[in-house]
Length: 250
Ligand code: F6R
Image 1 (cartoon, rainbow, N blue to C red):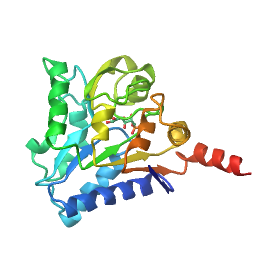
Image 2: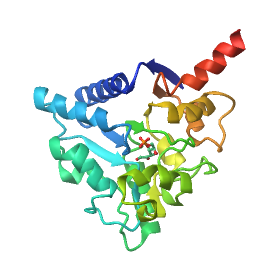
Image 3: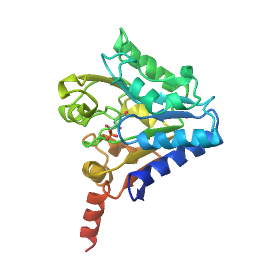
């Protein structure tokens, strides 16, 4: 697991956008795993800016999102479907049928989860998976305690995650209680992983991720077991890790 330290959110986003663009330019059929949340928004803006300037084509690219809330319709403004169209897909030339996001309103949500895993298996895992990280170290909606061999499944969200995500809702009780998420094993099927972290609220999770053995207490620490994982973290996100390292050297 490689760590790339950058100054702030802007530099992190630039690194990620260039990383993704390199993949799209070198393989026009690249399969991208994507994330929602605040962290990748600026990265997506940069992809849109590039599309407007250079018309990098996404005609043959396909995308696979990590997760979706259960119980809200794809066209609900709070769904991750809506998020992805609002922040990226509406502004690039990706065909609708190449966009894969779990359907949180499926009549059989457990079947939906196994169908989604089947799709991931059919493509042999995504080529590049973009990840954010939760304050508690979650990746996708895999909260601490999730076994590392879990595939796409239904989760009950923790209070801390519901609170963190309530900024997009009227209030915390409007945040769905369940979500469908790629599991840790599904994420590990990716050929490459790029995890982004920005801000002080992620400092503890980054510290936990890099110190000690990988443990289900910090789901992101599983990336230590992946042959090709890069973590791009800004100064605030690495602050605890750096402070601890310099203390142990003094
Ligand atoms: C989003 C996702 C989550 C977020 C994480 C960080 O699809 O799977 O794991 O990446 O909660 O969220 P932000 O970026 O809002 O801090």
